[in-house]
Image 1 (spheres, rainbow, N blue to C red):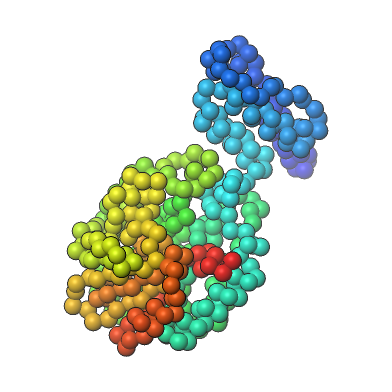
Image 2 (cartoon, rainbow, N blue to C red):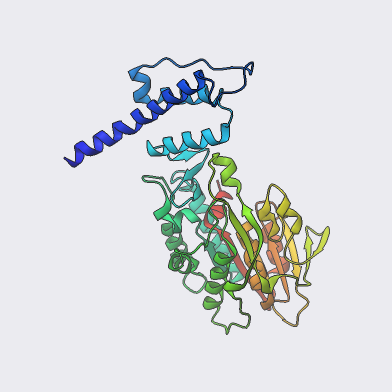
Length: 372
Protein backbone atom coordinates (compact mmCIF):
# COMPACT_ATOMS: atom_id res chain seq x y z
CA UNK A 1 0.00 0.00 0.00
CA UNK A 2 2.83 2.37 0.90
CA UNK A 3 4.61 1.69 -2.41
CA UNK A 4 1.39 2.35 -4.32
CA UNK A 5 0.91 5.63 -2.48
CA UNK A 6 4.49 6.68 -3.34
CA UNK A 7 3.98 5.75 -6.99
CA UNK A 8 0.81 7.82 -7.16
CA UNK A 9 2.62 10.73 -5.52
CA UNK A 10 5.53 10.48 -7.98
CA UNK A 11 3.18 10.47 -10.95
CA UNK A 12 0.89 13.07 -9.47
CA UNK A 13 3.49 15.83 -9.11
CA UNK A 14 4.48 15.97 -12.82
CA UNK A 15 0.81 15.75 -13.78
CA UNK A 16 -0.04 18.64 -11.47
CA UNK A 17 2.84 20.73 -12.85
CA UNK A 18 1.74 20.01 -16.42
CA UNK A 19 -1.81 20.98 -15.52
CA UNK A 20 -0.47 24.24 -14.05
CA UNK A 21 1.36 24.93 -17.32
CA UNK A 22 -1.85 24.35 -19.28
CA UNK A 23 -3.82 26.67 -16.98
CA UNK A 24 -1.15 29.38 -17.27
CA UNK A 25 -1.21 28.97 -21.05
CA UNK A 26 -4.98 29.44 -21.05
CA UNK A 27 -4.59 32.60 -18.95
CA UNK A 28 -2.01 33.94 -21.40
CA UNK A 29 -4.34 33.24 -24.32
CA UNK A 30 -6.97 35.28 -22.48
CA UNK A 31 -4.48 38.13 -22.08
CA UNK A 32 -4.02 37.64 -18.32
CA UNK A 33 -0.40 37.81 -17.06
CA UNK A 34 0.82 38.05 -20.65
CA UNK A 35 3.29 40.54 -22.05
CA UNK A 36 1.93 43.54 -23.85
CA UNK A 37 0.69 43.08 -27.41
CA UNK A 38 3.46 43.44 -29.96
CA UNK A 39 6.21 42.21 -27.61
CA UNK A 40 8.60 39.82 -29.42
CA UNK A 41 7.81 36.09 -29.15
CA UNK A 42 10.71 33.64 -29.51
CA UNK A 43 9.21 30.25 -28.54
CA UNK A 44 6.12 28.50 -29.87
CA UNK A 45 3.78 26.48 -27.70
CA UNK A 46 5.33 22.99 -27.31
CA UNK A 47 3.57 19.90 -28.60
CA UNK A 48 2.65 17.35 -25.94
CA UNK A 49 3.84 13.74 -26.05
CA UNK A 50 4.12 10.99 -23.43
CA UNK A 51 7.82 10.63 -24.14
CA UNK A 52 8.45 14.30 -23.42
CA UNK A 53 6.52 14.01 -20.16
CA UNK A 54 8.51 11.01 -18.96
CA UNK A 55 11.95 12.45 -19.73
CA UNK A 56 11.10 15.94 -18.51
CA UNK A 57 11.57 17.65 -21.88
CA UNK A 58 8.02 18.98 -21.85
CA UNK A 59 8.76 20.98 -18.69
CA UNK A 60 11.85 22.61 -20.21
CA UNK A 61 9.94 23.52 -23.38
CA UNK A 62 6.96 24.89 -21.45
CA UNK A 63 9.26 26.88 -19.19
CA UNK A 64 10.86 28.65 -22.18
CA UNK A 65 7.44 29.14 -23.79
CA UNK A 66 5.85 30.69 -20.71
CA UNK A 67 8.92 32.72 -19.72
CA UNK A 68 8.77 34.24 -23.19
CA UNK A 69 5.27 35.53 -22.45
CA UNK A 70 5.25 36.13 -18.72
CA UNK A 71 5.56 39.73 -17.55
CA UNK A 72 6.84 38.77 -14.06
CA UNK A 73 9.71 36.50 -15.10
CA UNK A 74 11.60 36.34 -11.77
CA UNK A 75 8.56 35.16 -9.83
CA UNK A 76 7.68 32.62 -12.51
CA UNK A 77 11.25 31.27 -12.50
CA UNK A 78 11.00 30.75 -8.75
CA UNK A 79 7.74 28.82 -9.20
CA UNK A 80 9.32 26.64 -11.89
CA UNK A 81 12.35 25.90 -9.68
CA UNK A 82 10.10 24.92 -6.78
CA UNK A 83 8.28 22.52 -9.06
CA UNK A 84 11.56 21.06 -10.31
CA UNK A 85 12.77 20.53 -6.73
CA UNK A 86 9.55 18.66 -5.90
CA UNK A 87 10.19 16.36 -8.85
CA UNK A 88 13.73 15.60 -7.75
CA UNK A 89 16.02 18.25 -9.26
CA UNK A 90 18.69 19.21 -6.74
CA UNK A 91 21.45 21.16 -8.49
CA UNK A 92 21.51 24.51 -10.28
CA UNK A 93 24.79 25.71 -11.80
CA UNK A 94 26.99 24.06 -9.20
CA UNK A 95 24.65 24.92 -6.32
CA UNK A 96 22.43 22.64 -4.25
CA UNK A 97 19.07 24.01 -3.12
CA UNK A 98 18.72 22.64 0.40
CA UNK A 99 16.33 22.80 3.31
CA UNK A 100 15.70 25.79 5.56
CA UNK A 101 16.37 28.33 2.79
CA UNK A 102 19.96 27.15 2.47
CA UNK A 103 22.10 27.04 -0.68
CA UNK A 104 25.26 24.96 -0.90
CA UNK A 105 28.23 25.03 -3.29
CA UNK A 106 28.59 21.55 -4.79
CA UNK A 107 31.75 19.73 -3.67
CA UNK A 108 31.49 16.39 -5.44
CA UNK A 109 33.38 13.32 -4.27
CA UNK A 110 35.23 12.83 -7.55
CA UNK A 111 36.37 16.44 -7.77
CA UNK A 112 38.03 16.50 -4.34
CA UNK A 113 39.55 13.00 -4.20
CA UNK A 114 42.81 11.44 -5.34
CA UNK A 115 45.59 13.85 -6.33
CA UNK A 116 44.32 16.92 -4.41
CA UNK A 117 44.09 14.86 -1.21
CA UNK A 118 47.58 13.39 -1.42
CA UNK A 119 49.30 16.63 -2.43
CA UNK A 120 47.56 18.68 0.24
CA UNK A 121 48.51 16.13 2.89
CA UNK A 122 52.13 16.36 1.74
CA UNK A 123 52.01 20.15 2.09
CA UNK A 124 50.58 19.92 5.61
CA UNK A 125 53.15 17.35 6.72
CA UNK A 126 55.99 19.53 5.47
CA UNK A 127 54.78 22.78 7.06
CA UNK A 128 54.22 21.03 10.39
CA UNK A 129 57.63 19.33 10.29
CA UNK A 130 59.63 22.35 9.12
CA UNK A 131 57.82 25.18 10.92
CA UNK A 132 55.93 23.51 13.80
CA UNK A 133 52.71 24.86 12.36
CA UNK A 134 49.24 24.36 13.77
CA UNK A 135 46.67 23.23 11.22
CA UNK A 136 43.07 24.40 11.40
CA UNK A 137 41.03 23.29 8.38
CA UNK A 138 37.46 24.54 8.33
CA UNK A 139 34.74 22.23 6.99
CA UNK A 140 32.29 23.99 4.69
CA UNK A 141 28.56 24.19 5.33
CA UNK A 142 27.66 21.09 3.29
CA UNK A 143 29.66 18.98 5.77
CA UNK A 144 28.30 20.40 9.04
CA UNK A 145 24.77 21.00 7.75
CA UNK A 146 24.36 17.64 5.98
CA UNK A 147 20.82 17.48 7.37
CA UNK A 148 19.94 20.47 5.17
CA UNK A 149 21.28 18.99 1.94
CA UNK A 150 18.77 17.57 -0.56
CA UNK A 151 18.38 13.79 -0.60
CA UNK A 152 21.10 11.86 -2.42
CA UNK A 153 23.28 14.94 -2.88
CA UNK A 154 26.88 14.01 -3.69
CA UNK A 155 29.16 15.69 -1.14
CA UNK A 156 32.86 15.09 -0.51
CA UNK A 157 33.54 13.42 2.86
CA UNK A 158 35.34 16.27 4.60
CA UNK A 159 35.21 14.55 8.00
CA UNK A 160 37.05 11.54 6.58
CA UNK A 161 39.67 13.85 5.06
CA UNK A 162 40.12 15.71 8.35
CA UNK A 163 40.57 12.42 10.21
CA UNK A 164 43.37 11.56 7.79
CA UNK A 165 44.93 15.02 8.29
CA UNK A 166 44.94 14.51 12.06
CA UNK A 167 46.49 11.07 11.65
CA UNK A 168 49.26 12.35 9.35
CA UNK A 169 50.29 15.50 11.23
CA UNK A 170 49.58 14.35 14.80
CA UNK A 171 47.31 15.56 17.59
CA UNK A 172 49.75 18.24 18.73
CA UNK A 173 49.51 20.15 15.45
CA UNK A 174 45.83 19.54 14.70
CA UNK A 175 43.18 22.09 15.75
CA UNK A 176 39.83 20.29 15.81
CA UNK A 177 37.47 23.02 14.64
CA UNK A 178 35.19 20.36 13.14
CA UNK A 179 34.13 19.18 16.61
CA UNK A 180 33.37 22.73 17.75
CA UNK A 181 31.32 23.60 14.66
CA UNK A 182 29.44 20.31 14.75
CA UNK A 183 28.55 20.95 18.39
CA UNK A 184 27.13 24.36 17.38
CA UNK A 185 25.48 23.18 14.15
CA UNK A 186 22.01 24.31 15.26
CA UNK A 187 23.23 27.92 15.18
CA UNK A 188 23.77 30.14 12.14
CA UNK A 189 27.49 29.48 11.89
CA UNK A 190 27.50 29.68 8.07
CA UNK A 191 25.77 31.97 5.62
CA UNK A 192 22.82 30.37 3.85
CA UNK A 193 23.59 32.14 0.59
CA UNK A 194 27.39 32.36 0.53
CA UNK A 195 30.51 30.13 0.62
CA UNK A 196 31.66 31.38 4.02
CA UNK A 197 31.21 31.07 7.74
CA UNK A 198 29.59 33.88 9.68
CA UNK A 199 31.27 35.94 12.37
CA UNK A 200 29.66 33.54 14.86
CA UNK A 201 31.23 30.57 13.09
CA UNK A 202 34.60 32.36 13.13
CA UNK A 203 34.14 32.97 16.86
CA UNK A 204 33.74 29.24 17.49
CA UNK A 205 36.82 28.70 15.34
CA UNK A 206 38.63 31.18 17.58
CA UNK A 207 37.51 29.18 20.62
CA UNK A 208 38.85 25.95 19.10
CA UNK A 209 42.16 27.70 18.42
CA UNK A 210 42.77 29.00 21.92
CA UNK A 211 41.55 25.77 23.55
CA UNK A 212 44.18 23.92 21.53
CA UNK A 213 46.89 26.44 22.41
CA UNK A 214 46.52 25.66 26.12
CA UNK A 215 46.95 29.30 27.03
CA UNK A 216 44.69 31.35 29.27
CA UNK A 217 42.27 33.36 27.16
CA UNK A 218 42.97 37.08 27.56
CA UNK A 219 40.47 38.50 25.06
CA UNK A 220 36.73 37.93 25.27
CA UNK A 221 34.00 38.55 22.74
CA UNK A 222 30.28 38.66 23.40
CA UNK A 223 28.22 36.86 20.72
CA UNK A 224 25.17 38.80 21.90
CA UNK A 225 26.83 42.10 21.01
CA UNK A 226 27.45 41.48 17.35
CA UNK A 227 26.80 44.51 15.19
CA UNK A 228 24.87 44.22 11.90
CA UNK A 229 26.67 45.95 9.02
CA UNK A 230 24.38 44.72 6.22
CA UNK A 231 20.80 43.67 6.98
CA UNK A 232 19.61 42.33 3.60
CA UNK A 233 22.43 40.25 2.21
CA UNK A 234 22.03 37.77 -0.66
CA UNK A 235 25.28 36.01 -1.42
CA UNK A 236 26.93 34.68 -4.56
CA UNK A 237 25.07 31.34 -4.38
CA UNK A 238 21.79 33.16 -5.03
CA UNK A 239 23.14 34.55 -8.28
CA UNK A 240 24.74 31.23 -9.25
CA UNK A 241 21.59 29.19 -8.67
CA UNK A 242 18.99 31.76 -9.71
CA UNK A 243 17.07 30.64 -6.62
CA UNK A 244 15.50 33.35 -4.47
CA UNK A 245 15.73 32.68 -0.74
CA UNK A 246 15.25 34.86 2.30
CA UNK A 247 18.06 37.44 2.68
CA UNK A 248 20.28 37.34 5.74
CA UNK A 249 22.60 39.74 7.49
CA UNK A 250 26.32 40.32 7.88
CA UNK A 251 27.46 41.15 11.38
CA UNK A 252 30.73 41.61 13.27
CA UNK A 253 31.82 41.65 16.90
CA UNK A 254 31.65 45.17 18.30
CA UNK A 255 34.93 44.63 20.12
CA UNK A 256 36.77 44.45 16.77
CA UNK A 257 35.32 47.59 15.19
CA UNK A 258 37.27 50.84 15.08
CA UNK A 259 40.65 49.36 15.94
CA UNK A 260 43.61 51.46 14.79
CA UNK A 261 45.47 48.55 13.26
CA UNK A 262 47.56 49.05 10.14
CA UNK A 263 47.09 46.73 7.16
CA UNK A 264 49.51 46.67 4.25
CA UNK A 265 48.39 44.85 1.10
CA UNK A 266 51.01 43.31 -1.21
CA UNK A 267 53.57 45.89 -0.07
CA UNK A 268 51.69 48.69 -1.84
CA UNK A 269 48.52 49.84 -0.07
CA UNK A 270 48.21 50.82 3.59
CA UNK A 271 44.78 51.00 5.23
CA UNK A 272 43.46 51.27 8.78
CA UNK A 273 41.19 48.79 10.53
CA UNK A 274 40.12 45.22 9.83
CA UNK A 275 37.05 46.08 7.76
CA UNK A 276 36.62 47.53 4.28
CA UNK A 277 33.33 49.45 4.27
CA UNK A 278 33.31 50.02 0.50
CA UNK A 279 32.70 46.33 -0.20
CA UNK A 280 29.25 46.38 1.42
CA UNK A 281 27.90 48.32 -1.57
CA UNK A 282 29.66 46.10 -4.13
CA UNK A 283 28.93 42.75 -5.75
CA UNK A 284 31.24 41.14 -3.18
CA UNK A 285 30.14 42.13 0.34
CA UNK A 286 32.35 39.40 1.82
CA UNK A 287 35.30 41.63 0.93
CA UNK A 288 34.24 43.71 3.93
CA UNK A 289 36.28 41.28 6.03
CA UNK A 290 39.84 42.52 5.54
CA UNK A 291 39.45 42.94 1.76
CA UNK A 292 39.72 40.58 -1.19
CA UNK A 293 42.10 39.57 -3.95
CA UNK A 294 45.36 40.29 -2.10
CA UNK A 295 48.22 37.80 -1.96
CA UNK A 296 50.01 39.00 1.17
CA UNK A 297 48.82 41.23 3.99
CA UNK A 298 50.88 42.52 6.90
CA UNK A 299 48.72 43.47 9.90
CA UNK A 300 50.29 45.46 12.73
CA UNK A 301 48.32 45.86 15.93
CA UNK A 302 50.54 48.44 17.67
CA UNK A 303 50.25 46.65 20.99
CA UNK A 304 52.79 45.37 23.50
CA UNK A 305 52.73 41.74 22.45
CA UNK A 306 56.06 40.14 21.53
CA UNK A 307 54.90 37.25 19.35
CA UNK A 308 54.00 37.33 15.66
CA UNK A 309 51.82 35.00 13.60
CA UNK A 310 52.27 33.74 10.05
CA UNK A 311 49.00 32.52 8.53
CA UNK A 312 48.52 30.51 5.36
CA UNK A 313 44.83 31.07 4.71
CA UNK A 314 41.96 31.79 2.38
CA UNK A 315 38.91 34.04 2.74
CA UNK A 316 37.73 32.03 5.76
CA UNK A 317 40.77 33.35 7.62
CA UNK A 318 39.79 36.96 6.92
CA UNK A 319 36.85 36.94 9.34
CA UNK A 320 38.79 35.21 12.14
CA UNK A 321 41.89 37.42 11.98
CA UNK A 322 40.20 40.33 13.87
CA UNK A 323 39.45 37.94 16.74
CA UNK A 324 42.88 36.37 16.96
CA UNK A 325 44.89 39.55 16.25
CA UNK A 326 45.12 41.00 19.81
CA UNK A 327 47.21 37.98 20.83
CA UNK A 328 49.99 39.13 18.49
CA UNK A 329 52.05 42.17 17.59
CA UNK A 330 52.15 41.41 13.85
CA UNK A 331 50.30 39.00 11.58
CA UNK A 332 51.41 37.97 8.11
CA UNK A 333 48.57 36.54 6.05
CA UNK A 334 49.34 34.87 2.73
CA UNK A 335 46.57 33.60 0.47
CA UNK A 336 48.15 31.03 -1.91
CA UNK A 337 45.25 31.45 -4.33
CA UNK A 338 46.39 35.01 -5.12
CA UNK A 339 50.04 35.12 -4.05
CA UNK A 340 52.34 34.92 -7.09
CA UNK A 341 55.58 34.27 -5.25
CA UNK A 342 56.95 31.27 -3.35
CA UNK A 343 55.10 30.59 -0.11
CA UNK A 344 58.02 28.59 1.27
CA UNK A 345 60.32 31.58 0.81
CA UNK A 346 57.87 33.74 2.74
CA UNK A 347 57.80 31.18 5.52
CA UNK A 348 61.58 31.18 5.67
CA UNK A 349 61.66 34.99 5.90
CA UNK A 350 58.75 35.62 8.28
CA UNK A 351 57.69 32.31 9.81
CA UNK A 352 60.89 30.86 11.23
CA UNK A 353 61.74 33.13 14.17
CA UNK A 354 61.61 31.94 17.77
CA UNK A 355 58.74 34.34 18.57
CA UNK A 356 56.65 33.39 15.52
CA UNK A 357 53.72 31.00 15.40
CA UNK A 358 52.62 29.45 12.12
CA UNK A 359 48.98 28.59 11.40
CA UNK A 360 47.29 27.02 8.39
CA UNK A 361 43.79 28.52 8.46
CA UNK A 362 41.97 27.36 5.33
CA UNK A 363 38.66 25.86 4.39
CA UNK A 364 38.95 22.16 3.52
CA UNK A 365 37.77 22.73 -0.04
CA UNK A 366 39.91 25.86 -0.45
CA UNK A 367 43.06 23.90 0.38
CA UNK A 368 42.14 20.99 -1.91
CA UNK A 369 41.35 23.34 -4.79
CA UNK A 370 44.96 24.57 -4.74
CA UNK A 371 46.01 21.11 -5.92
CA UNK A 372 43.33 20.36 -8.51
